[in-house]
Amino acid sequence: MSTAFVFPGMAPSKFAELTKFLVLDARARRRVAEADDVVGYSILDAYAESEHDYSPAAQLAFLVSCVALADAIDTRPDAVTGLSFGQKAAAVYSGALTFADAVRLTAVQADCEAEYFASQHQDVVTHTVMRVPEDGWRTVLGELTWYEISGVVDDGFHLVSLREGELAGFTRRISEVGGYSLYTMRPPVHAPAFEALRHRASAAGFGDCPLRDPEIPLVSDQDGAVVTTADGVRAMLLDTFDRPIGWPSVTASLHRLGVTELHFCGTDNLFSRVPRAKEFRLHAHNPKLALRPRREAVPA
Image 1 (cartoon, rainbow, N blue to C red):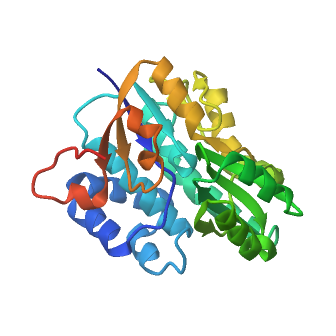
Image 2: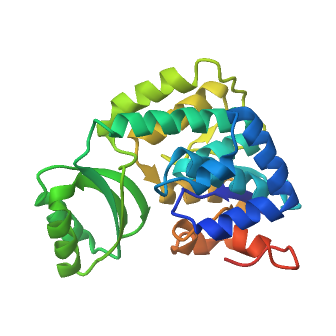
């Protein structure tokens, strides 16, 4: 049976649940200590003082939790993939990036994002919709003055970046054509309009960040390509800023690799829930489950 580790994109986490795991779990404590040494301050203290769900400290806490959860799985994956923010943890488990460098890269690029969106694209958000009929989807998109697709999760399940002033009308029209709105992300993500952010993050984060060829097949979240070189890993990590994610392409690639079982390493309320994920045998590994008396994989 072939297995893959899937590191999910970052979603707002329950602070108490995540920090409890990072404090009480032995593997997590070791990872927290290593991360603290890299950044030079207490990640947990900074996370406690964070004012929003995607702050640099929140990103670091989420990264540490995902890697620590994967540490506890008693199997070596045959492939790894990461969705959106999860790419860095996936790169770590592929052997392409050390954990310390992943922490350093996360901190640097989080600061780049905060600085960039403080002055750029302040009127843009990324909104998630599901169960939207294809004809209705195209109709509603055509009514917007500007948009860019930021991701495809499954049939009728999309992430779209649009101007915030049009969001209320957009969500109303999605409902009228039979779809459902989920949540809105600020700052926005994965849109071609953010190419300048990609260049800024590249210059700030990769100057002294050594990368290696992956030791385990690493599947790109943009198009499902199997990344085999250090240069390919660098491109994948930068593509996250200005290329949409494509979960259907990822699952198709995992099927081609013979993967039948997925271990989701981190809190996920999105990618493991859709029909394409259900084609695999699923296991959930998240902070809440990790603190149960018996540590075992739980079907997603």
